[in-house]
Structures are given as structure tokens and as C-alpha cells.
Amino acid sequence: MSQEPEPDKRLPSRRIADDLRGSIERGELSGGAKLPSERDLAARYGTARNTAREAISILQGEGLVVAQHGRGVFVRPQRPLMRLGANRYSRRLRDETGLSPFRIEVTKQGRTPKTECRSVTRENPPDDVADRLGLDPATAKVVRRENWYFADDEPVQVGVTYIPVNVAGTSPLASEKTLGKGSIYARFEELGYPIARIREEISARMPNPDEITGLGMPPGVPVIEVLHTGFDEQRQPFEVTRFVMRGDLNGLDYNMPVED
Image 1 (cartoon, rainbow, N blue to C red):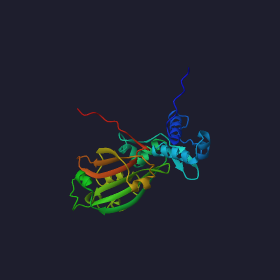
Image 2 (spheres, rainbow, N blue to C red):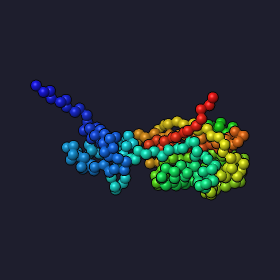
Image 3 (tube, one colour):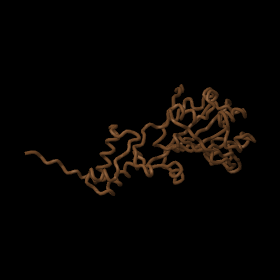
């Protein structure tokens, strides 16, 4: 006598989400593919539209799909934008292209880069930045440059650069939002601070409300935080940048020698 299959004890919304997730993982729904509408999902699974909506919300929370107003819900492309740590600060590439590190690596990956400098101000540095620059956070002043970065018009990261005022001086770094050919590291080099070495401290955390809004973060997706310090040929730090990157759209690729 054959045994009856056990009833599916999953909530209907979870069952729909699991089925759609499986289709995404198997490649049946590839990056950029449009999901069936709530009406179609409800009809397919014999549920209410609210149940189908809840299933889609589950996948949004996992960062697998993204809703586009007026168009529908689409599978998020799984190709991350890689931060190419081995050569993103290359002087040769900067001289050949005239581009900033971000624009170089985004262009190399077949995407269209865009950057916006939102503000250039003077203020006291945060404690961790002051520590890496060897400054007194209570008395020292730094130039703070806030930049937002886009790939194919989608916000992917924000970077806040801190420069000691004695380094920036009266150069464009201290006041101009647009820095011209070669961007920020070409201007540093003109001031006698060629970037010769970097330190990058990497961590992950959940985004704050401003980051959620500014970067268009889907629910449940973390950010990658990179605290970058640039050193000159004398191994003196001359700038610190805090990058906050969407965890679902970015990856890190470092290729470096191993110390003895």
C-alpha cells in the first residue's frame, strides 16, 4: 500500500518564494528577467494576491529581486562590480586613461561610470580617521570631500575623503568639486604626494537610514565598509577615504604578494 506524501507545511508565501528562488538559482530566471505579476502568481498557486506580494517581499529582503516602479519586479543581476585592489591606483592606467580609479575599474567591467561630488567642507576628522592620519581630532582640521558613485546610473557606493589642510593647501582639492584629468590622485601627485602604498580595512555591517535612502538599499542587504589610507613614497599618510558599498552590488578582488 503506497504511502501518502506528507502535506507541505510551508506557508503559501514561503512556498512561492522558495519556488521562485529555486528558478533563480537554477538559471531559469536569469539576471534582468521579469517575475510573473502578483496576479499571475496568485492564479498559478491558488492564493490571494497579498500572499504573492508577501512572497516577492521575501525575495526582496534577500536581495534577489528589485521592484521598478511602473514596470514590475526583476531578478537582480548577480554580476557584482569588483573593486580591483591590485591596480585601481595604477599611475600608468591613470596617465593612459585620464580617469579616476572608480571610473577605470567600472569601464574595464563593461559598465558606465558616473561620479558626483556632493560637498567639499572643512571640519574636525572622526577619531578613527584622525588616528590613521596622525592628527589630534579635537584641534586638527581636514578637508572633507563627499562623493557618490554610480554604475549604469545605479548608486553603488559613497566615499568620504579626508585630507589634512596642510596637504590640500589652496589647491583644487580644498575647494573644487571637479578635479579634472586624472582626478584626485593626479592632484595629490602635483602637490608632491604620489600614492605609493595603501592600507584598506574591510568590514561589513547593516546600513543606516541615510545609506538605505541614498543607495536605494533593499531590505536585509548589508554594506561593505572599506577604510582606505593612502601613503606617499616616504610611507606618510596623506588621505583617508571611507567607502560604503552596497553588499549586493559590489565585490572585492585583491591580488598581492605574501610577506615573508
